[in-house]
Length: 185
Image 1 (cartoon, rainbow, N blue to C red):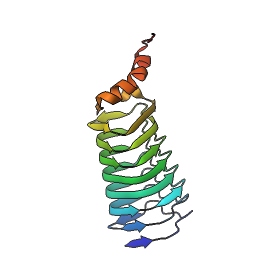
Image 2 (cartoon, helix red, strand yellow; image 1 turned 135 degrees about the vertical axis):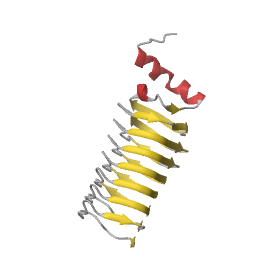
Image 3 (cartoon, one colour; image 1 turned 45 degrees about the horizontal axis):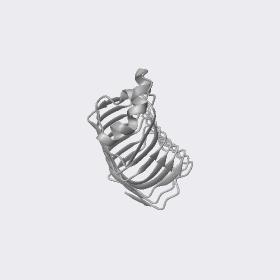
């Protein structure tokens, strides 16, 4: 099934199933897609504010050039997902489970990964601003190729992540503050 340019603003599709679907240029403002399942699907150029995908399941999905704000994906399961290009502001992935997920060439502004389980997640050429990793569990998370990494909360939860030497130096003040070290000249 192909949805092209469809305006799905304010539509309710809780628990809907999208199998082998393409959503191209669709508007998702305030769409209620909680507990929806997306499998083997591509979302290209979707845009929207306040889209509710709480507890949704995304498996073998590509999200390309999305322009989204305030997307609710808390409690969701993302497996073998590629997010390429675009900009997502205030992405809520709190308590979500991410496995084999790649963020590539996108801008994530104030993403909330609080209490998420992240396994084999990679960030390539991304900008990640004001990220919240509070109580996040990481295993094989690769942050080395992030072009701009700004962690607002949860720097102490980076165990299980790989960062570059440059990122280590940039994060040194936050690491020092976390363990109570005062640095003075």
